[in-house]
Image (tube, rainbow, N blue to C red):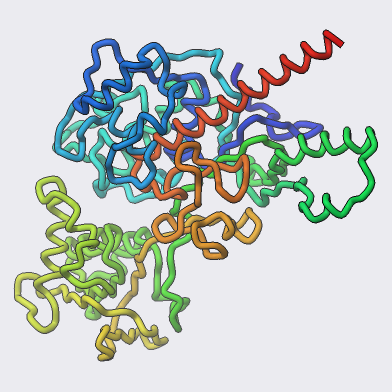
Length: 509
């Protein structure tokens, strides 16, 4: 049966759980849904447009997807994720979506209580994670259908919530509300504990070095062997410390243990910094919310000096649009070339994302050397980076050719992305990435995982999910939840099998 929340974190002795998930955004929600016993099967009437994949699915139609060989099913598939199971699950949920088709999912979901795996999901706020902190009016990058989680179509949910549906895209506020209601509607709310803050995660017990074992000349006695067996069982557990913030503002500390730890923290915890002189000055901000607040309160109305926006991603584009719509002059500086194929604007269809293509058009036409009068309050500085910020509200820009320019500004917005904050892990999790001893980032240095189990290649029984492993779009994180569920379930079956065999042998003897 699912766990009750009351006093769950305050067990004495501390509670030992099969699975603990840190992070209650869409990644953690989706994994909880599958660990709660919801199983995907091939629908009886389904016909996948990929004939090879459909043939593979037909071979084991009677089995749920987690019971099948994910590597076999994933073979030969291509998509916008580097993780094969993410591509597999996405093409089952949204067949040929990248080609513009709107085929229905080929899966049907069944709740099978016998497959429930006890777990809890720890989050700082309500289910939905960082979506509750995002600006509520801008449109999301993805189509509403791609933001949805298994078992509840976003359009069906939105029909009763939205007064005027002009676009398939949704606002962050709508998405956040969808995730919060999803947890209630699916009956998995009791697995979630809100207002929890993790302070440390350690594995207290470690395998001794091979050299230590080899240097021991004496054979272990029976008592020593039993102690080592107990230690071997204990070392699998992760020890989690943290506190829960109560309604009165007090902090209630807790400690619990888990056999399997899943990191689903997302990547919005720590804004990326330029690491230049003057970046900590009060007029320099790393949050679009702070800018919107300043605009809303009229602090930038009639400002003579422009706002400097640094970055060429979608958040920077949102800031440009906010400034443009409020008649605030902008200087826009970014490192990339205008024809860089990796610019996000080149990857978005104009029909679905007209406002972002408007920003890209501004970036291309309003460069100082050929500024047009189309957008007189906006100036683009491609292939420029910030050299320093000065106390007198001036910023020094430098081009890739070495030319410097000093600009007088009213505010600076540094919007160059964000990084996950894994401060609660040893060395902030630096050992977990593809590049050893470098910070974990969702693009440049994600966690190194087994592609078919999502288990860390560096730490057994530690799993990554979502942006931490490079799945930055919600449509792809669901594959990670599938892979982790399958892995944990298979291991539990093996453990039960060994226990039964051991009991049989003891009975015979």
